[in-house]
Image (cartoon, rainbow, N blue to C red; front, side, top):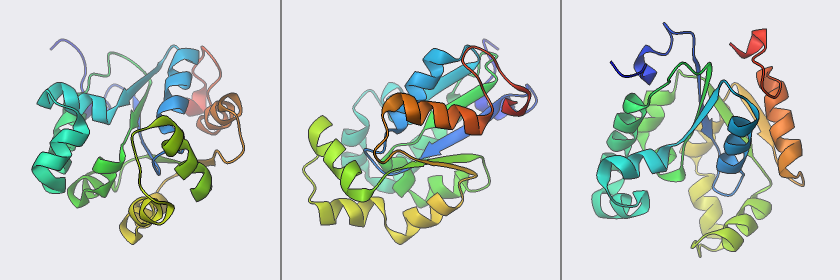
Length: 189
């Protein structure tokens, strides 16, 4: 086998975290910064992994195939991820995967990190940086549905990025994970 996949990660002592939260809270940006600061951290954006499997944008696949098939593709993408000896794996879970009941069931008993922010701040971030024109009400209905809130409540680690710059948010999450830049601490295992 070329490398260790997520299914084998426990026997290889990798710690896998599913990073959840509403769109615009900073999941991708924070995970990417942590990966750059820490040699033993690997960050996967689940939507990008789905795109590799399907050959189309994740949003297009979701729109064409529905949430049930998208959830199955999300699980398939996770199972194909390669740990390559990293001690910490951060899997950035997009809104489509979080909306799938099958995927929520798949990660229900796994380590989850919740990154969140005040609803209006998240909505403003997606209006500025993405092709997402949902109204504030539509955004809140999608991102904070009862099922999503139930998932968020299962997270073992949580940070709120409201009013914080990226470095402050990255530092807070690294501290909660027990890691320092470039070095894996004992409680980061």
